[in-house]
Amino acid sequence: MGATPFTERILKAKLPKGFDKPTDMKYDGTKDPQEYLTAFEARMNLEGAADAVRLMCGK
Image 1 (cartoon, rainbow, N blue to C red):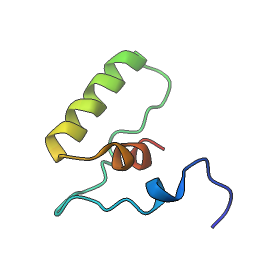
Image 2 (cartoon, rainbow, N blue to C red):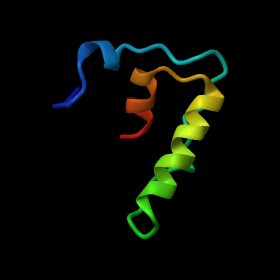
Image 3 (spheres, one colour):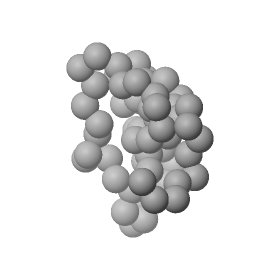
């Protein structure tokens, strides 16, 4: 694996059972970033994702 800003703990984080990484939530820079972050946080809360999982999904 190449260089990464993530710690070993984050890289080894377990996904919740049945978790589907949201591929439809990429920020493209054309819309309000606060709106994107609010939607992303709501989705991660709904999925029950831990902080480490949120970081990996947000990359």
